[in-house]
Length: 237
Ligand code: NAD
Ligand code: ZN
Image (cartoon, rainbow, N blue to C red; front, side):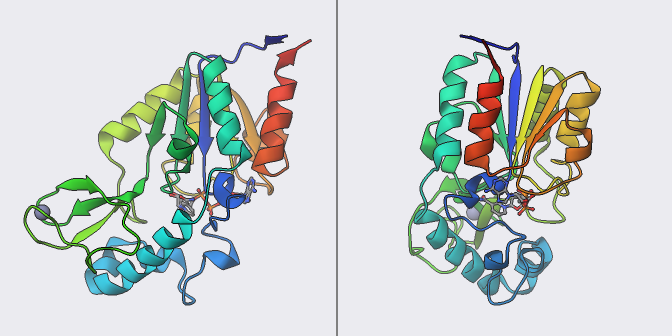
């Protein structure tokens, strides 16, 4: 069997792809922590006001995510990557599950919950300790307080990273969007820009999103099921 012309293929994933691994999406009820919405804690203002509170939230999320493993959708993407030579995975997720599954060409546009960033000297380092060794974590270089190296609501994305993401979608032949609400910018712009540049756009999501209306084909299903169906549809018999 042959595969339909998909290259260059870009897959854009959001919290929905990790939902079946047990990682709550931000908009799901179980994504709430002590009745705070993520938008109230995952912000520079919240961190400035109360770094302990924000770190408690992240310590909870790190523990929760550490207990999760990649699901069939994460795994299936690694198989697709083996068959498509020009393949880029752009993820909004900070959980590290794509890397854990074995995906290789990943652009983590919102950073990683497993990386620290010093608020003073800008030092970055990996930290997978559960529980955290120090609370709140401190920079090993200068001793100042660290933050999670993730992009918070109200922050701009790393210019180099987002430029790479835009370049990639602009030359894509096909874009597959999985489990993203399509309302967090500038990530939400990526499928639209790709489509404007001629890419065929596919969406897998359990719910309707702003991307659904511009997609060439929508799979209204869970990521694991939708991805298998999409791949089967790309086989030329
Ligand atoms: P979101 O929470 O706003 O939306 C999740 C989307 O996934 C929704 O559209 C929902 O309908 C869909 N969905 C839920 N379960 C699904 C399933 N099983 N299969 C397919 N689709 C499913 O997430 P977002 O759009 O990624 O934006 C939220 C921001 O929060 C992101 O920037 C991300 O960095 C961050 N976030 C990350 C994680 C993570 O790393 N796993 C989790 C929550 C939020
Ligand atoms: Zn420092």
